[in-house]
Amino acid sequence: MYFTKLIIFCLFLTSFSVSATTEKILMLGDSLTEGYGVSEEHAYPKVLEGLIVESGKDYQVINGGVSGSTTASGTSRLRWFLKAKPKLVLIALGANDGLRGVKLSQSKKNLKNIIELATKNNIKVVLAGMRIPPNYGEDYTKQFQKLYIDLAREYKVKRIPFLLKGVAAIKELNIEDGIHPNRKGHKIMANTVYKYIKEYL
Image 1 (cartoon, rainbow, N blue to C red):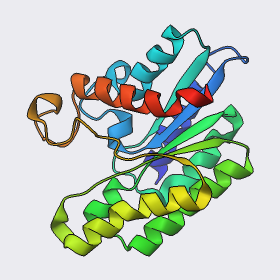
Image 2 (image 1 turned 90 degrees about the vertical axis):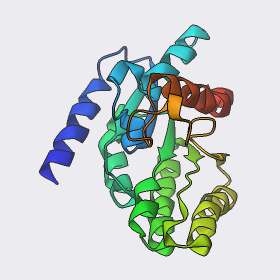
Image 3 (image 1 turned 180 degrees about the horizontal axis):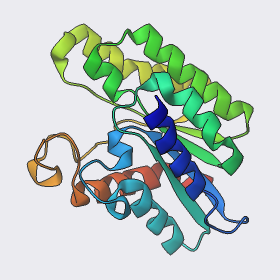
Image 4 (image 1 turned 60 degrees about the vertical axis):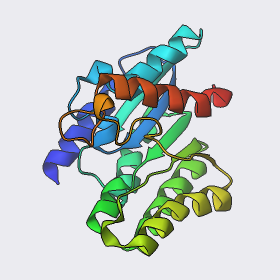
């Protein structure tokens, strides 16, 4: 727990490295967001920041990804970043819940808490959909995917159907473990996210 908080604190400090007038976007996620297997500059949050800056807008994208994290830590982690005053948060959590067989009701509750904390603080929310292999049965897999659809509809937030669209299970777009994207994969993810958030910029 201490180590995780230390990581988040270090990430939090980076939010003050730019002008106070720079708008901020928070990517709240796990190893997919942190950029496991690639350098920070090649992880999709940094690539996304480049795309936004190239469009002529002054934004900093904060990488709030922590490897191994689940939805359970999302609310407390978001609180760490509130002082950075992000305009928008991408919630990219839940993959580890699914891989560990966490009860869907609990994952849903955790995601609700994150969304509600964000909206309470006037932060726009984009929810990134996740998918998992059918390790825990076809019904669990389908209901897991539906969870994101239901939440987006309930809270009227924009949803990215699948964060890893065009990347998952494609060998040349992932590192050796076949799960985490490589540089090319992160570029595709950045473009996917940009397509869904650009209307808020």
